[in-house]
Length: 97
Image (cartoon, rainbow, N blue to C red):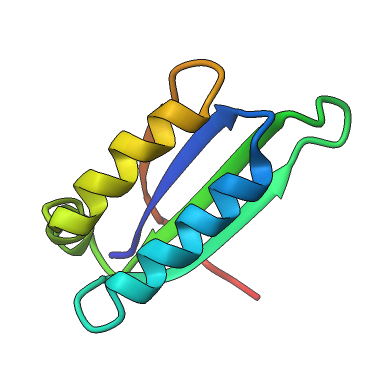
């Protein structure tokens, strides 16, 4: 069963967040387990964002979380945000295109 993690965060430093995300992707090219990621900006609250990160399974998400690059990413991301990041974890029960 696939798994998604949803991160919600507020930042006025969106460009730096984007650069950090790109840096993490480069650093984890052969080790990350992320299948897909989508980042969206709230239409009515322009400093509010949501990232939806998809994994093949919860176990693969846990493996990804244990990467040292992910630890560094999270520490830096926290500094770029205006409030704490909220994390929500979901098992996917339906996936249709």
